[in-house]
Length: 182
Image (cartoon, rainbow, N blue to C red; front, side, top):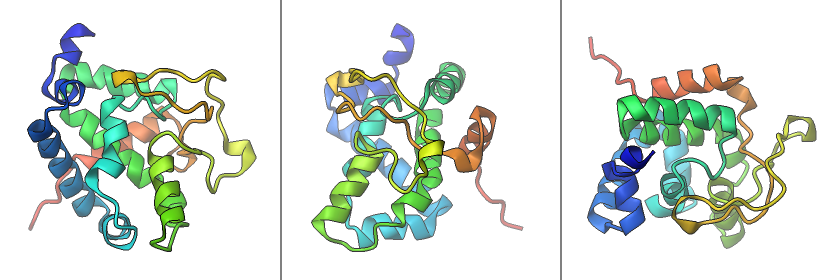
């Protein structure tokens, strides 16, 4: 784990290296615009969110802020071999999987912006989900990477649309694919 934490992405977010963080944000936002253009427009233009508001909690916690243990362990296993790009791809896949919930916030007011920021970070992960789809996290708040805590909400992100961890990993792989131009 020490070797993984010494990679550029975690080091950037542990040391608050703004240059490296901005490069990570730039790659993530470019990928989001390419893979999910409508969602990107919704987040950046309609809700007027910044890269930091969308991605910082995910990168600072290495995705432990909302992924269930099965999905998180698969991502971290791949991270050991594939490097930091898998963390960025997973963040894009997560945002893509949360589309149905994110599109429920249509007004660019403070309430919608705060709700979306909370959904992507530490807030209510059950927005727009049926109670039977919820998966309980530990009851006590869990300290995240970088000293952040999951405000005690107790739910993981609802990503039932992609199925189990294999379905999620397929979404992560798709987030890294570039369409060939024929």
